[in-house]
Length: 163
Image 1 (cartoon, one colour):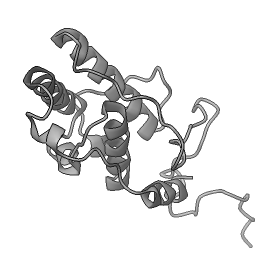
Image 2: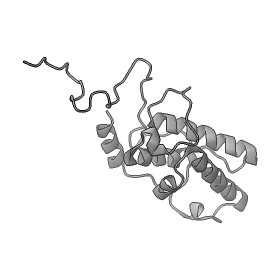
Image 3: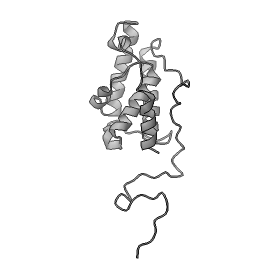
Image 4: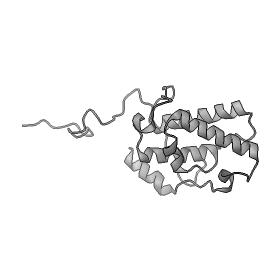
């Protein structure tokens, strides 16, 4: 006879591989619901180059930790591919959405698949932010593109999948 599993425990096949919340993992805060105000995007246009890079780095670190469910002070490996850190394509989409909100500009999903480590993505984002700031409004593809984020339905799907 088998013993009953406690409610909420992972199936035997995935036991030991499924991530479970611990006391060390801080409670997540979900993105603001549709129709509410999100934090203001980081305005990098008027910043000097070094400060601009630091601002983009801090935003990327914060959003990557949030998407990976890491504590605020967790070290993020800078040369390890996102998928090797445990990200899925849905998590990459969530990271993209958070970066779009944080930077206040369009970011193609393909960019995150082309720049697959923290350092590579940081270099790209800092360069794009620098080119945008140095070029002036309307001079780059990012300025001409929409800053729309995926529809609220994506938020709902992500919340259901990662509860």
